[in-house]
Image (cartoon, rainbow, N blue to C red; front, side, top):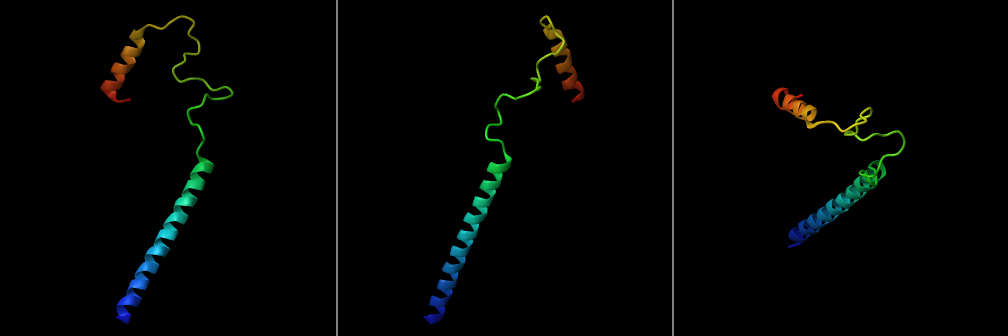
Length: 79
C-alpha cells in the first residue's frame, strides 16, 4: 500500500511539474512573439513605401494584354 501511494504521489508531482513548465514555456513564447511580431501587419506603410501593383511611370491606364502575357509566361515557365 505504501509503495502504491508513493508512486501515485510521484506521478502527480511529475504531472504538476510538467504542467507548470508547459505554462511557463507558453508564456515566454507569447511574450517573445508579442515583442517581435508587429501588432498590425496589414496597416498602411509609412515613408516612401509603394504598393506592389502601383505602376510608377504609368500616366494612363494599362491594357490587360501585358498582364495576360505575363501571367501566361508564369504558367509556362513557373517564374
